[in-house]
Image (cartoon, rainbow, N blue to C red; front, side, top):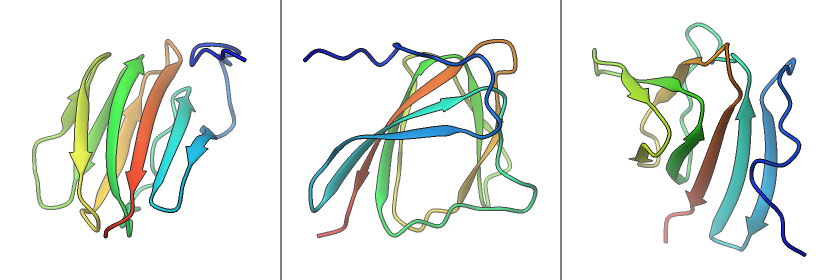
Length: 108
């Protein structure tokens, strides 16, 4: 059965919506939907997996520990985040739904 990443997009959520689309022992693919959410103040993701993420819709700003420049993300922008590279979501669009496609890769 075909599915579409833009099906059933909410316009308002109390928290980000994270959906597991595919998973193997070493790879996990998620669709993340944001409606203005951001990481809590002073919170940093510090993951055991590497992460490749592409922004499909909306906009977002990412922050990386030790980097004074924020990374603005627009549709089509992607970034590779290595394991234990501390990062946070500074902001996501409050005027349109933001859709991310994220691929997590466990180290070999």
